Image (tube, rainbow, N blue to C red):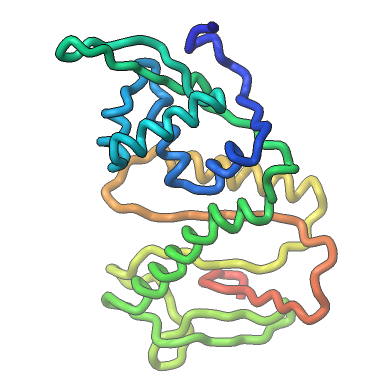
Length: 229
């Protein structure tokens, strides 16, 4: 059997049962428990995942049958050998016959987008400079949906103590080279700030995607605070 460190290629998923693991974050976390060189015993796995010993044992047996974990050693405890298992893979290829990209994107990003929306509304409605409503403005560039003060005037993020939020979207008419340049700049900007370790959690989810044929009745309102309007 190859050593743990020898496994460089991705595990190729060949059955629906294994593909199903990657549709459920909790199941992925359970498998990740074994992605450590020292491995884990069934009892440690049960304790970490709050499964019964029997349920944990059945799951490890299933992992072993599917080739996802290997027995790597024994540990002697109170005269009884304890098997140690490890998952030698940290990447997995799932062919498209087992996975829907649309469903996967929805399942992964849906809960995060919902959390971001709730949090945005919460922080924008409180504090020293709350948003009091929405301002719809029509310009030569199209329809803009902007946060407004309780008085009806356009909201500004400038007053000290206002929560730092960014909520902006809208269509961009770019050629291919411009789109590639923007994508590189967005990645660089995100990575630059991701390396910092401040005391507050902020969520940022950025998407730049081509829309070849938008529906005729689909409106693209520009949202958020920007100097362009």
